[in-house]
Amino acid sequence: MEDASLDSNEHRLALVTGAGGFIGSHLVDELLARGWRVRAVDRRSPSGDSLAARNLAHAIGSPRFAFEHVDVAGPHLGELLAEVDAVFHLAAATGVRGSWGKNFASYVQDNITATHQLIEQCERAGVPRLVVASSSSVYGGAAGGASSESGAVRPLSPYGVSKLAAEQLALAYAARRDAATQVVALRFFTVYGPRQREDMAIARMLNAVRTGRAMRLYGDGSQRRNFTYVSDVVAALVRAEHTALTGRAVNVAGPATLSVRELLELVAEVTGRSVPFVEVAARSGDPEATEADFELSRTVLAYRPQVWPREGIAAQWEWMHHNGTRGHA
Ligand code: NAD
Ligand code: UGA
Image 1: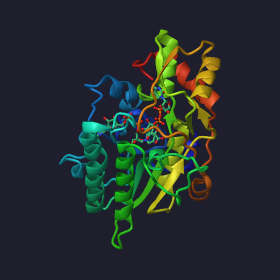
Image 2 (image 1 turned 45 degrees about the vertical axis):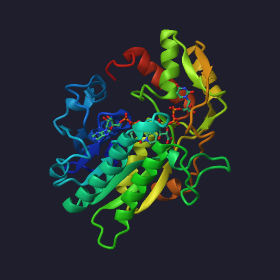
Image 3 (image 1 turned 180 degrees about the vertical axis):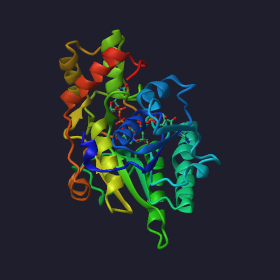
Image 4 (image 1 turned 90 degrees about the horizontal axis):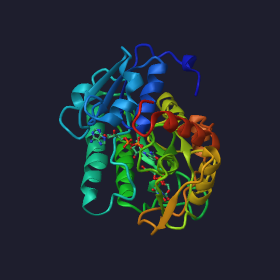
């Protein structure tokens, strides 16, 4: 993690949407460590939701932290934007494989409509800076080599379509001649680490080791992912607020790609136990491979991922070992 004393944020106010979730809660902790005041927005409240309570346990003790139990797509968001210096938009409907069929309605609402509502309200309130969480799933895969921001986007899942729409909506507002709000969208590649969502692969593998209950391997495990440790994502979010860049989407990825089979082996090495699993059919919407091109993130954010999978998985295992899946972190 970068030195918190690098910048002075004593009087600056950040609003973080999706603050009760995996990445949002880590960002909240980092912003507080850097001296920001943080207004945290989520429709899961730490007083009524055990995951949000666990994720925000550190932040809740800080006098510079306030939680707002609000739906981003609802009518009360605008009231919270007064005097906000930067908005970090992480709220979303998140699973790739669960976005088919009638579930898509909630992806439209939480990813497209909510982002539209947010950017409209940011413009109205004159919020200077908005950082939007986008996703590698906008690319649909990296069959022809690493995905570059200037290359083709061809999402393979309804989730990916909704994230592309949300990202492009925010960037279209930023391109308006009279735009008040500068926007950067960060395309995260499969993020892991403590507090990772329980539907994701590494959390499921570690949980299978812990409980001895088999996880399901979707397909033959040859699919590859550019896994990214959560502190690298948080560092990129902080940098994206800091630069003068606007109107661009930028990749944020980890230093290595692994197949899911290689991941199973690495988890076994780290934990000292093999991962019990059963092979089931591959899931629609899962790309065969993701891999990021780093040139733009290096140039505009001076971003370099710091955490390699062995170290990151060990940290997630250590955390899970001490906290179970719903303990305090
Ligand atoms: P998460 O599900 O842990 O957190 C999302 C939070 O948003 C949840 O707490 C949820 O309650 C909240 N939320 C959803 N819709 C809301 C609404 N309408 N109003 C208020 N709150 C709402 O997800 P995460 O893994 O932390 O992902 C955070 C962001 O990063 C998302 O935008 C996701 O699409 C993006 N992303 C994540 C990954 C990853 O690997 N985790 C990769 C690429 C992109
Ligand atoms: C992740 C996030 O869940 C998305 O929110 C995000 O947008 C996306 O990354 C992204 O990079 O854009 P995914 O890559 O599917 O999606 O991450 P995992 O859920 O960790 O899955 C990784 C791989 O493991 C996938 O190929 C999946 O099929 C496989 N997997 C996952 C299993 O075999 N079994 C499981 O139980 C879970």
